[in-house]
Image (cartoon, rainbow over all chains, first blue to last red; front, side, top):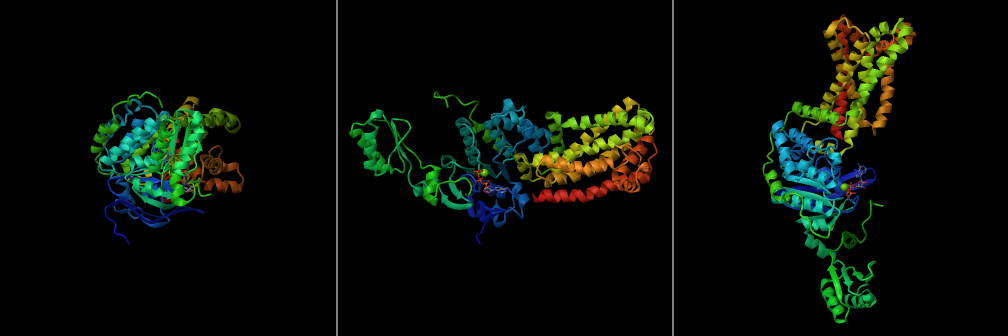
Length: 320
Length: 279
Ligand SMILES: Nc1ncnc2c1ncn2[C@@H]1O[C@H](COP(=O)(O)OP(=O)(O)OP(=O)(O)O)[C@@H](O)[C@H]1O
Ligand SMILES: [Mg+2]
């Protein structure tokens, strides 16, 4: 057996079964301390179930897990005393106001009423919620709710924080706010274990990523390692003159040696899986052939492409 | 998204969030009593924000007292006023016992919400949310008692045991109701939905309250029913509440009620806590 050392989270053969569904099916994970770790997978992959086991909310059916050196079953209280949790669905009380939610948690964590109130004010200010402090949470927007949820998780600064899909459903502005908060947490030394369905998010935030599908770990590494192991993104080209699209498609297809898709936009073409070096040659070739390019982008592989590359099957809702 | 960049609302979170993280030292863990009282406070906040949830506690006692007094009063005791003297302690018991269902309903509703995950991930005394909710419920029961008593006094009910007798009766009713609440916390954990709890509650509570001496003395009942009524702990509660309000409660009667409450709680509280901890 491995010795548990500097890892914030370490699991061996972690398993959870619901009836016939092996929601988490023998996951070995080592999350180093002090960084943002991304847990990436499609719907039903087992992300929430894994996180709930690590946060002591679900009892594993097999294997073991240590969080900050403590066993999640035998030493559940020691784990609870050191981690914070923001669930996938708002883990704040909708009927109470934002301020009341934070005071409630402050009291439950051991603060005096006075200190709990001061702490609530401090957090509401820091998370840009001071104006809505006295309103019931059910009147909050999705972004405000998420920020309150995050604030609720740091009433006492945790050593490790679990965030289950912290930005799903948020608009780009709110998402960026949450990303900033997550980066700040890691900067201040809190280990962040977050789940996401978006490769882009994991790429933006996480120092390491675990890819999970149907309850099993299918890849682990830095975002760079994952992307190079899974190949290439798509080259998207937008022409000045839509009439030249057919000719441009022939040129791209010849240089890239790949099939080219004609997009809905009549001036645009997309070539999935383009090799970056060939892509630059292809762009030069378009210009030389008198087919001026308005814009182009070489995208990252999407989660779908990563999956296809790693598993040989596209992402699927649940295990069909 | 707008095409022109707009300034983000307020200052960037970085600095203030960083400051908040730096000052988030963990205080010593609170005790089980303090944690339970915090959850009781939460129950009060919920009543303040969602006062509709009190409608049953308010409406049922008023309807029962008025309805039974005038429906049966003339037939049973010659006049509504005379019957009220007998009935009121009974409606008090009935109103409070029917309110115990909501303990289970509220727990069941709560369990389905994300915030309960947060509570369960805290390093607190595990049954504290349930204990706190019960403290909150005790206040609802007191409110129901106060309503029935106020209405009764208005209609002509005169407790000869005085304020002390009334307080004793109320205290016994609330203690018994709290014990019975554990039955419903257990159902709240076992059953799938608030509706399921309501239906099971009717099956439990209607026999418990109707097959008792709340509405009539059991003397005229057939022998087998008489036996059932005598075995029903609610009968003893009502008898004792009546005696207390009349100023004639005996130590034996009071002990019987406390004992019945203790037995119910001793069976259902550990079952509830065990099931809750295993969730
Ligand atoms: N309480 C439960 N009872 C039965 N099955 C469950 C339960 N919780 C989860 N599952 C099943 O376990 C599998 C993994 O679910 P989980 O919620 O962990 O996935 P996820 O990766 O978090 O998905 P999403 O991105 O949709 O949140 C799914 O097939 C789900 O249906
Ligand atoms: Mg999930």
